[in-house]
Each structure stands twice: as C-alpha cells, then as structure tokens.
Amino acid sequence: MMIIIAPGAVALIAAILAAAISIVDKVVNNYGEVELDINDGKKKIKLDGGESLLSSLAGQEIFVPSACGGRGTCGACKCQVTSDVGPYLPTETPFMTKENLADNIRLACQVKIKSDISIKIPDELFNIKKYDSIVKSIVDVTHDIKEVTFDLQGEEINFEAGKYVQLVVPPHGKIKGSTQRAYSMASKPGEKDIVRLLIRLVPGGIATTWVHTELKEGDRVELVGPFGDFFRTPTDTTMVCVAGGSGMAPFMSILFDMLDTGELDREVWYFFGARTVKDMFYLDELRELEKKMPNFHFVPALSEPEEGTPWDGATGLITDVLDKYLKEEIGTDKKREGYLCGSPGMINACNNVFTANKVSLDDIFYDKF
Amino acid sequence: MKMTPAMTMAQENMQPGVITEEGFLGDETIPVVDMIARDEGEMRDAGLSFVDTAKRLAYFMEEGQKGLGEPVTIDDKWLIRVVDPRGQLPCPFKDGFFHKMTAQITRKETNESVVVTDLSIHLLREHHFIEGKGSRFRLEPQVMKRVLFD
Ligand code: FES
Ligand SMILES: [Zn+2]
Image (tube, rainbow over all chains, first blue to last red):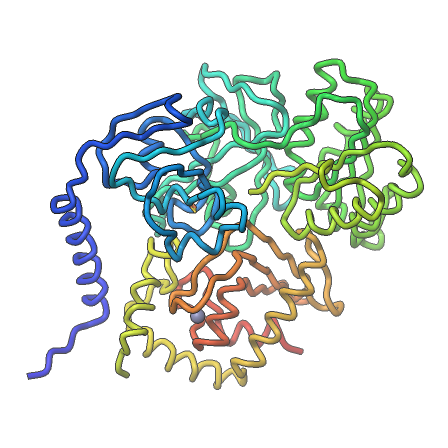
C-alpha cells in the first residue's frame, strides 16, 4: 500500500517532531541550575540551564541588542564568552571577523547555556531598561517617514544624544513572534519622559510596515534602550555630520542638545541628502537653529531635484556635495570629525570622501546597526 | 514530483519562524518541487528566462546602491531604492549566506514595483524558486515582465 502524505501534513509532523525534540531535550538534558558570571564576578546569577544566553540575560532584565528575534540573522547580539561553550555554529561564523574569533565573541542568541558560563559585556548594558510606552503622536514628516513620539508614562530615560532604542514589534497578522528593530532617538536628552523616532517605510520591511499601516496613537509599545556608541566628543573639534532619510534622527538630538546645553560656538556642518523636495523635512527647524548657533551650517542637498519645484539648496549626491564643501568651505587645514548615520554603503562612500580630505578613520563615528 | 531530501530540508527551512518570521511559502502548502515546476511554467508563459531575469535584477540592485539609501533614477525609466539593513540570511537550501539588502524597483510611468533581496535573486537564479504566492517577496513573473523589461 502506498501512503501519500500531503505537504501540509509533512509541515505539521515536522513541527510536532521539533516540539517533541525540544521537550525531550528539556527533560532528558536537564542541565539543572547553572551560574552565569558577568564581567569577572561583577554580577553572578543562578539560573536554569537550557536556554540561549540572549534569552537568559533578558530574563534577568539585561538586554543585549537583537534585531532578528534570536534567529541568528542580524548579528546584533555579539557578546564575549570567556568560558568554553563549544565550537562556533555555522549560523555564527558568517558574522565573525578575525578579531571577533580571537576574542571568542559569540552570538548570544546561538549560545545555549548548558553549564556554568562566564561572559563579558559593556557596563552600559546594565543601564538598559525596557519601557512600557504609549504612542503619543504620529506625524507624517514626508510621504514615507513618520515621526512617532512615545510617552514613557512617568518613567525617565537617561541617554547621551545620538543613542538608539529598540522598538518591540508585537505579533500581528502572519507574524507570530515579536521582533525588535533599532531606531536612533530624535528626542533630546532633556526630554526624559518621551522618546521620538523617525521611521521610514522599508520595502517589504516587517517593522516599518507595521508602524506605517497599523500603529495608532494611544497604542502600547515596548521600547528597550538606550544603546549605542554614537555621540559627540566632549571637545571643540569641528563636526562634519552626514545623513539622509531617517538618519536625520540622531542629529536632531545632538544639535538641539547642543543648543540646550549652551554649546553654541562649536563649528558644526550638517549635510542632509534627499532625492526631491518631497523627501526633505525639518528645514525650518534647522534654519532657525542656524540663527541661534553662529557656527552651525546646514547644507541640505537634493540628488534629483524636479523641474518646476523651486529649490535654493545644494544639488548632487550627498558625497559629492560633502567633498566640495570639505575642499572649498570647511578646509582641510584643521582637525575635523565625521559623524554619519546611514546604510553601510553610505558610510563606506562617506569614509572614502573623508579620508581623501585628510580626516582620519579614527575620527569618523557611526553606529553599526 | 518527488521531494528529494534536500527539497524536504529546504521546505522545512522555508516555514515561518525558521529563517525569517514569515517564511518563504506565503499562503501555499504544496511541495516546493511542485511550486518550482509550476513557476517554471509561469516564467515561460511570461517569456522570461531565469538567468536573464536574475541578471536584470542584479543590475538594478547594483545601480540602486549608488543612491546611498535614497531612490535613484536608472536609465530614465526606473526609480530604485536600495535599503541595506545589517545582517545576513542563509539560503533555505543551505548553500550560502546573503546580505539583507533589499531593492524596490519602480517603473516610473506605471508606478508598479518589484521588491527583491539578495537572497531572492539567488533563489530565483540557482533554485528557480520565486517564493510562494502570498509571500511578501514573491517575484510574480507577469509583474516582473511588466516592470523590469523594456
Ligand atoms: S539576535 Fe539576531 S543574531 Fe542574535
Ligand atoms: Zn541557495
């Protein structure tokens, strides 16, 4: 007799088997209580083995960045493990540089805690909190960018301008699990009771589609943060900032924080690229800022200005505009720092322009998310 | 058609929650081999070859990167926006890893778009797999024919 099994049934059987294996693994491989040592004994936690390092830490309210739901596809959850946890998994190696391998950096979501384990994480991660927020307002700043403000409901967030939070996107529609995505804060450190993000629609993007089509004022949303190493140096070195699209966010925070804290004299150049006038935003706010900060220069540039739409700013690809200004306006004789917010491709292209204009790679700052 | 062990593994990896939250199968439950056979027919009906379509998509992906995250007009007719979130996805057939780079290719005169990723170009070229109907990244042959070619 031939047995034909429908593929739906195959998938179901596979799912049942996977669940059964995981239950058997929990029962048979009862790892018992294990000790998690963080930063050479700074914190020692007893917990039940068997979970991933990422979820075990989250269970202790220690939040490592993560943007793929622990599936090993974002590489955000890198973490140094100083005890032996077995060889790298094939899911981990594509994310590891030579230095990472030498330092035994692992993906926290792929490392399963089976016995006592020691790890090292940056001290800042102890300050990261989960915030239960309510959407206060949603404003369209362009046809594909929304400015979303979250009320932290009496809680406060302490951060340096330039840092980011992770937005927790709940299960919805066909999406069965919750996912997290990183967004730089556009709000200022002085505004402790809110978080403001700029969210641009990404084609096919789960999180941004959810924000653009489903999120409403009054909704409850979890935020985790603040994360990141992107903030201005405490010097008076000339700052050259470059962004496009939602990369505007950290610079709104940094520039308006400078205004609030009275850092009015530092020389700052801000290059913002968009394609057409309809992709430009916050022009009035930044022009106002130029009046209040005498050494702040805002250079908005359009890469494909449309005929018939008036535009009196710069035109061209943002890297060409940056190159021209570095040579002709800012000058190469003084020390300058580069601040970037954008995709890896944009960061590479800007790095090339900066280094060609004698800005050292050590003086160029950006977040890797 | 018969599912080989490699196809069975791929079909499991394509389920929601394995490699991506939504998976690759959309609303479909038929075996991947049957989807591929049907879609080879749909590509033929649309007059598209897998090799040329993959080349065309890769061309747009590469040109679109010149916009550095902003949309850029290519050959006067197409507006391409490439978004490059950090991270990589394994192919469900386990023969490589691909950046999560995504391109939205819009034909300006009709405003119709195709959304493609590095992984979906690979799946189309190497496995003749264009994702299940109802998937966010399904590459519909008739739509590709209208949007991508002169
Ligand atoms: S959470 Fe994405 S790779 Fe670990
Ligand atoms: Zn493959």
